[in-house]
Length: 450
Image 1 (cartoon, rainbow, N blue to C red):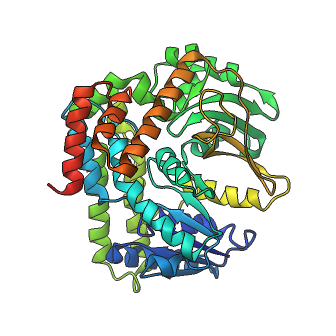
Image 2 (cartoon, rainbow, N blue to C red):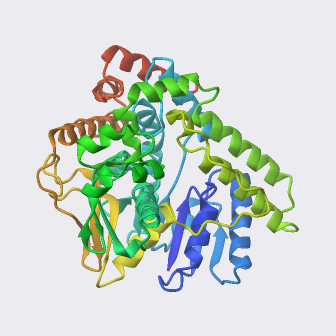
């Protein structure tokens, strides 16, 4: 079977390939095809991917393709992981939003709208190609904002689309480490939307332990997902939060921390990526592949260790020096996708957190709406866990953000700028028509290159 990666020059592709090496035989995958419109970066990432395979003495075939059609023809699975406009578009979005005193984060709030407006039209065009050259393929959307993008694709009739985010799986992984159990011994149940979800159940070896964890200050402080929150907010809610809820629970702190910082997250990422590719372009990867790989891993470490540090005001984690870095084993986006493929091939199935159609999982939104919830994935299909009554503050936020997402998708697909203003105004991190109007004009100018 074949996997096509659209956006294959993305920096996570090397880690994706390394994670696949441990599982490709069992999953019956023999080839990965990479395609990206940035050929120079794609050639660099392609060489690193092939070296990772060679380094482990495996025989997975990795090919760089020059057209999307070539990449997806005959593919069984397609990964979409694109960033339309590149890293600098993220910087523009952040600064446009911060200029109006609101959050510019690339998936949550105003920045998320602008990123969706760049990505959705391009992905809808790609889907037409997928439908022609790989009509039976499953599409795993990694492109942010994952929930809104998946909503847009599904609303156009592309039913075999699954939105992937690694935040829930990474949280479960770290929780298992802290609790001294394997991931298989820990059941963690999520409900909500992408980057707007809560943990409603944690079972350790079958025993419910969420109430105990909510009372455990040491545990909350030991987890990077929870350490940024006021403990009182977590405890009084009765749920453990997705880390992106920080922007809703502590909106003014996030904005103040970013404004007081020398650089935004987007500016930091843009600088790191530019330095990485400049250094890699000067390296003869064919002659010195290990040196090139260590360069790549060092800059990836810089990215990951500074995650959420600007917004939260928490110091970045320490770095390991170049030359001593190992390739991550694929936990994250790739791990969730591979778990999903494994579940689809299994009679027993697996419980995973995915962005899929609601199908009655949450009563506060429609059955066709895309939610991010725990699902049972097996040969029988993907079945979201059914949730009962949820607290009003969760329900209200889910309803509001889902309405914002659907209004945004419609505005983006139709090019209706008036509707786009109202969509932005609906988002609680904007919550103002006059600010939304200014933001829409800025975002439109940036996308149009004016």
